[in-house]
Length: 318
Length: 261
Image (cartoon, rainbow over all chains, first blue to last red; front, side, top):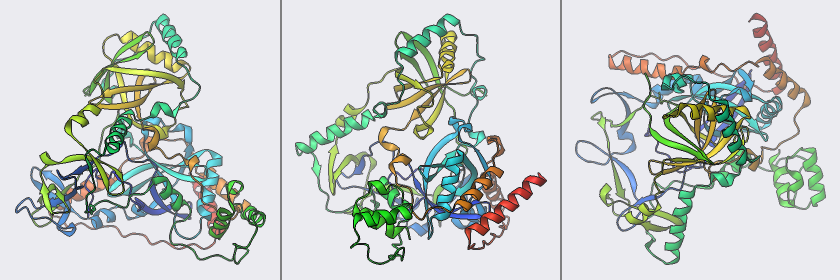
């Protein structure tokens, strides 16, 4: 079913998009997953009895509930008159860009004006080998370059900067130039020469509040904290606590974003059978033996791994 | 055409007090679709239903609840929700200033321009002072019943207020373990580096246009006029075997392109 605008607050376990990064003639199959948790703390809509509600679509004519295949996507060309577009048509408008993020230009990361950054997604390796993925990530991170490209996801074109950090590729969507206003567009007045004394005065005040680092404590969502406190208090008192019998059928498979990303970075599913990388059963090997093997395989983070984690990482490295 | 200010406030820290107007620095240009009843080609109605009973619940009767654990919710009433709303205020309070590279773009959410609201001199003096070091202020304010955290920065001669994501929203790359595997082949790595350097350039963001949006609008126009629309064929892709070979051929092609440019 086509997506309504802005109707995704929960994190689904499915990737947002799957496709290929092309870099020269090299193809790197990837999945695209959100890098940000949904904003704020979200409240559910419930019935007067406390049952979580589901959003449904009804026919405007006879108030009959519509199934997914009775709903189409339309663009209003004039009041009350719509042109219907289906997913297939939209995809066929730009087949190559619907599938590929084609990197043709690499720019210094620092050259991107922060006003353009919109949203971040992690790219995780899809399909068999991680080699091409790791090669691209390593080379880009070392060169401090971001790859620039456009691609199409869910019937919308995105300008993206692909960045590498900690061996992981990230797609930062950028606003198009015509989506960003200039001070002249906004109608800001022409700058005037500021009195030097006043500039100095501000500088002094700024230095009084100066800290070398940003503290994430500054970014705490105090509204969410107040909500959580109230909820905890009511829960402790057993006040307005409901246990609906029916599980809302729209409640998606919500899991922790971090876990989901980590699983996807490991290659996720499908689970690979044990590989003959040095071979056989790893469970009877000592930790030192496993560590040596992890070293040969250049498994990152190996020094901090337990015996089981080492065995698991070696299996996956196949 | 000048934009309308969406809010007015005052930047405050220490003895500083600078009145400003806030303007969106971005404008949405995406093509918006509506969900339609396929048969009637009319917008669908959205309703909330109680899946336990199948009954429609009117919006006036909908209550809000917070899920606390598996299958358990705490219901909040109107008064309680109202008590959670932040105190209205016109203050953009700056709690500290940091070196401008400290707040990385991963925290950025939405940019706003600030313009002077009287006292032009103090507005441009503050922008000049921030630009000098350069520094960014960590700001908090309440706008339309919602609390915001932001970064106050100078952008040229003007002030920009960037809303920031909250602490829990960003999953930093450093918290994730990168994909593992065998050590990379040094020769392949060298070729990948070379390939990147043949494609290095300065960023010209205006060179990128949302062409897909143009094509969608063209398609809509054609369909509205009752024309039959032909679509280009998707190119097929060959599956490549050896990464080394592919890198070599990519490099050769990139160098050829560069030489002819």
